[in-house]
Amino acid sequence: MNRTVTWVLLLVYIGLALLGTAWGTMPIPLNHVVRTVVATAGIGNVEDVPESEQFVVLRLRLPQVVLLGLVGAALACSGAALQATFENPLAEPGVLGVSSGAALGGAIAIHTGLAATVFLSLPLSGFGGGLAAALLVYALTYVGGRPTMHALLLTGVAVSSLSVAGITLVMVLADQHRVQELLFWLVGGIRNQTWEHVWLSAPPITAGVLGLLSLHRRLDALLLGEEQALAVGVAVVPTRLIVLVCTALATGAASAVAGTIGFVGLMVPHVVRRWTGPQTSRLLPACVTGGAAFLTACELLSRAVSEQFSIHLGILTAFLGGPAFLFVLRRRERAQP
Image (cartoon, rainbow, N blue to C red; front, side, top):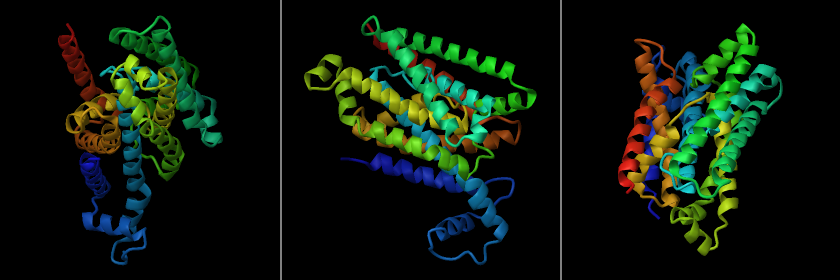
């Protein structure tokens, strides 16, 4: 099975991650970054690397690029799985309301103080909110039979609007300090995140992504249509529910630590699919590494732009993803008779 695209995108992510670790207000030579990172595995020594540089690399910047990889992988893989599950090229966590539901769950955890006092409460709240939103969209669209593309999208928009209204209510009820904390979290980004955020999000993201990867045979069957999937023995409804659970788990944890970062699950699968084809056994792994590389590249771009004016990662992906969404929608409409 050809995994060339996956490995190439992994190398791209590693290169971008090293660049992101070296680049900052305190520039660090790239060879010092590599030696510091490699030394953590017991290879080589860093005696001539200043301790200040080692601290910045290991304690400040490395956890951020690792977190970018985790979040990008979660969003891109979830988007590809949802597109295959619902046979809809516009399906992705943000469009279907999963990200907004996860953000609402996280906002409630932050507002009530659970996020600061109870371990894992933030990713679990994000998972619960994302899963509730996903199940609500699924129930509303499929209760009357197989939905059209527009019905699925409109339902997702409606559920997202409800979630946004809930987030707004939380912010109205919160004090000024909480409002500022919620606002900076909601616009999306990984700056000032630490290894604690990595350890908090890595288990649920890994579990959700591995769950989606294990479903590649069922997803390939769903690409052929519900009737064909049933004919080869695939239980359509249980498969969709499992995909929604795995997506909510990965997306909820990603949103909990990085805020709302939209359209990654739309853009990355469409680009990667051109190189791998629609077969999910190839597409999903490539989306994992492609999503990590894409989000890391977006963070580097946001840093470059931030030298002129401040722009958060979630805002940048929205600027990039909005036109991409419209392009895919128009192309889909032209393809329909």
